[in-house]
Length: 158
Image (cartoon, rainbow, N blue to C red):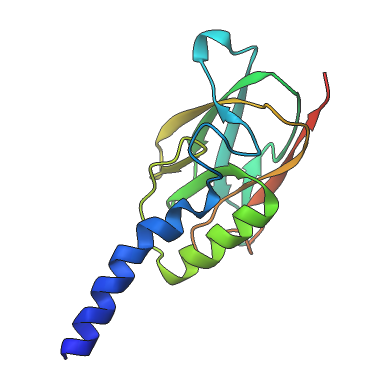
């Protein structure tokens, strides 16, 4: 019993470290960019998250094109019947985070590049894209990514 309790304690303590796996030196220094200043946003992208009648889970839209240096407001709405997430990061970091979420599905986040919304709720992420490349958006609630809830953000050079 003592071993089980110690194991649970270690898993609990390790969870925040694993949850922060998408960071590269802190919130302001991620490859995908950094939290943006809403007053400097040049575009608002409205994103809906939901389940479809055929069992798929989707973002609408699920592909975006932005410019390096641009600040975007992602206005996110959960129009579905389940909790969903909107996570913005590099593909490898998304996949690492997905694996952690499968082990710890109730893990809570406090990351500026992610938001989890209950059904009917709305929220926003303000993001400045500081690097060009292709990045991912994903819902990392277990099973949702595999049901199709992911997409790409292509950041073009200025």
